Image 1: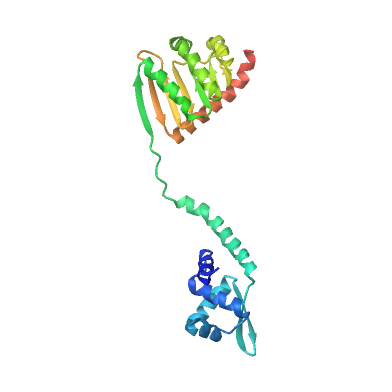
Image 2: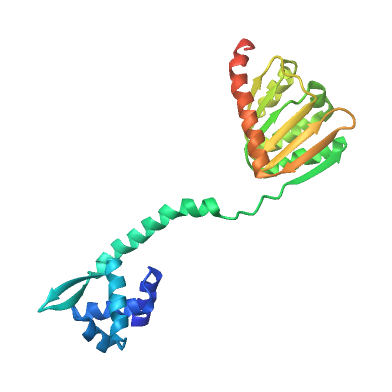
Length: 249
């Protein structure tokens, strides 16, 4: 390996070029005075002293006195790994502070509204592209009847893609839900008093809110923060439904 390549590596761990040159010179000689180093590397004596002081602070060299002269020794090359680990540790300590002051770009939230049952079906089918777990709550019984055969095709495709469904619904939808659950990759919980004309579907970074009263329409929100918030709300309902479902079974 050429000396220039060695210097480049030393610079990558925090030494500047002159510090690298002085350290390599000391490795070659074993020990030396600042004057002798200055003569060999062609750096002014005063600057050489400054460089040596910086290397001492970095733990790259040590200093002793011989015959009333300051003599400098390099650390073993293998000890440079300890220096690198120290720098890495210091960097890890400041990363949380840097992240606090980081100017992070605000997430763009996309919202769209579609009307009509055909549009709603298309939106639901595209929801399966997220490839994540699907959370649904609030689908009324007549909405399941409105979707008809599409509903089974939707869940067959969902099961084929191995997308787990977790759903919360009212007691009046129990029979239909049990039929769909047989398709696979589905878990359902019941809330006896649950009754809603709006269904909420959460998958990945998408939230699809469907209004089942005429005209049937869907609001699609694309945002990780919004989807996470809706998912957290679903989990709270899910945990509540686990206890209440025992009275239904």
